[in-house]
Image 1 (tube, rainbow, N blue to C red):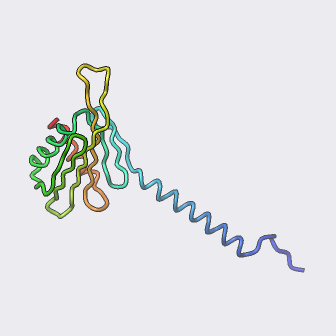
Image 2: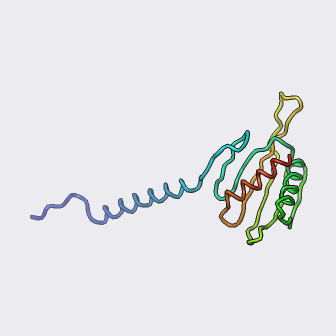
Image 3: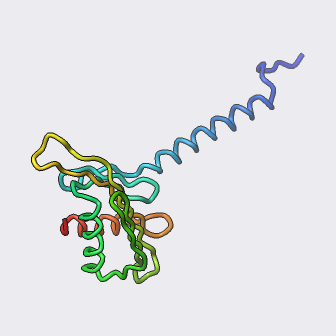
Length: 145
């Protein structure tokens, strides 16, 4: 009589493929959120190639600071638009990587004199993102606020 382990080969292969799938999913999820660091007074995140940061300024102030920052970095502005709640700016580097800056009103901080507005800024460069260049653009925007 031949002894078996109690499991058929099909079941073992099935469990092995599930284990491999779970491991790959965990590895991919770890790669999605690469960095959450502090920049000046706030915290920024770099997720899926997009740098996100909240700035204590209005949409108009942040939009004008972004335009000035791109000019100081000698980057041409190809597209721009803004209203009271949302703004965006598009530019490109010499190597052809696009820069997309999105600005969005979040909230007003009450209890302060004067009342401060909080604006969300997201910067995405190229197809997969570039954290170093995004940080450089963000730093220049902050200098102009």
